[in-house]
Image (cartoon, rainbow, N blue to C red):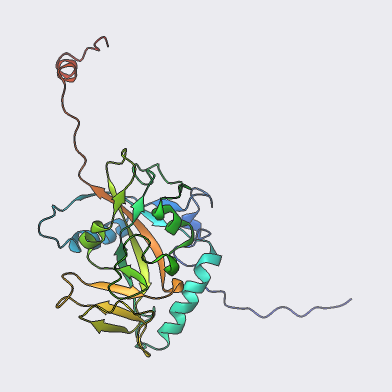
Length: 265
């Protein structure tokens, strides 16, 4: 009888929090890439607080947060991001376990009604829907400037801690949409290079740095962070917000509510 030696135990790293194969993320199967976060979940309060705190435009009324969805990814789409984060971690402060990873906002086009209700969770394939394109494969730096020709800090991926600034770049193409959406992404900021003036020809941060931090001052009223390749960022949450306008009360609706009797059409 041949005796085979037992394999040595190998420490297998746990699945990333946003991996679709993680047990708590598999409620709706692998097809659904959005998982609704319940209001009772501490994550809802955390992201909502981040969103409200980041709403800094004084002339904009603070909106209500209606839904928050967690964005799920396959291991294959997470692998290069996590590898990049680990490489940056080795160059920043030892106490930072995530390469100075931050949750930052990004606004973009939505052509469909994704997130409009708690059940609208399937990504569309509409050509003009930048939101679903980003949620399907993450950000693509080659598409920088496709919506806004002016690139303050060059050819990169733009995010911000100011949710009301991200709202400036949020567009609903569908006339049926009544709410707005913003992406909250994990961004590996690493060691940021601070800039107060525009630098439209940049294609990377200076040597020794991992991102550009646009600071409030000469050319900016609200800060922004720019990274320059795709593995620096992955969407983590989708915030659905806004103040729904109530439909006007018609005479028929008023009478029905008063007498609770259906009226003939």
